[in-house]
Length: 602
Image (cartoon, rainbow, N blue to C red):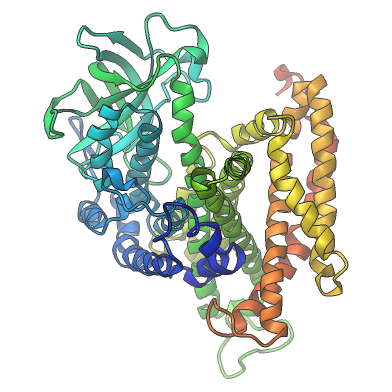
């Protein structure tokens, strides 16, 4: 089994010392009771639950998988009990509105909880994760009657939710969907069609499943402009919210998958199923993107969580596994061999994992606090600024952190050598589980196109200002400090490349959209590397005084934590950030190397 303990010191450090949670989040209207003390209690209890309840059933759940028979899906041993405990402990209601039985805590805490869950049991996390997305869509776009009926059940976890988009012939291009919605005399609709790849579409954890389904009305305009969104429950609810008769929706099969095997991925058949329109006709794509954008941030955190477990497991193994001697001579002469952590290549792997994970966690929580400001800040301009930052960074969080999750899980497996390839050690499961995160909720290539095709030009570059302006101001404020030069100078060079690449894409993309498309994935990674460099430099500003002044750090009571931060920041600047130069060169090469070969020649 893998090694994992929730990285609470790092989370506390980021929220309290780097992002000033007490002011930026707990100080927002409606969050007055979400004090740092409450934050700490949530962290402690969440860590305890995930480590003690979810981690022990992760490996066994992967080995057993879900069981399908005659339309019924049963989750692996221990999952139902764990889900009941999850609900009883209030984790499904953490960030939900108190009007529907929720605790009303900040979305930032939900982000933290999601990392802990995904680190310990990604398959389990899929079930409440989908419900949380359905909750968000209904809360924003459902009618008062719909919210009163469904949201309390989603909040307490007795009902779960799904998002039903993909069909056998269409994935990203949802304008091609064939699922139909025929108006009924009672004001409801009859939904018919087939959806595939539906996570948590059928299972035995809840008494009802609320499907949010994209379908087209008879008078729908062509393409994505003609898509509407419907509520289609597995069981038709009575007026009092109790479960009624079975609806015309059934699971046709479950997929045999590479990873997340304890999460049921279903083919769902809608056969004249009764459903209810959410919001206005033909606005379904806009409503569903409410759910998808939240889900994309959550998927980025899935990659982060898996990478964290891979890192901790690799560190524990590298300290314990003895092979050969240190290159400069035996580190422990009394032993038959030295632990492999003495070898430079092993340390390079571990340091790369650590630098990207801790920088990635800073990115996720920076955006997480912005989500709360966008929703709760009393100043409309501040809300808009925060919302712009979230919109800009969402494709970066999703794509970069999931790419990192897969890369670093592989790196951790490499540290294990042959044992990493064996199921019982748990590392190969992390690799398999991580792979899907780069694909679902919009492939990472789609995220890159979203960044260059939508986000760069939105509002005449308004979104970009939420990143470019603070980074430029930070560089100008710190560039004359000799103690900061080793951090600020690499950041400034990478930032200059990002600015130049942005201008090039904006200019070339107007004349030829293929130029923007050819640059998109490299540009997203360049943006991500620069963002992590900025956040690492902010962490240096926080940690340096804790060492230089001999102060005790709030993270763990001594300077060792902050010394490790500086060492990791130096590694990031010296061994990771230089990749931005290669990315910049690739971007500036343009589309020709990609598009020159005729399709027939492949």
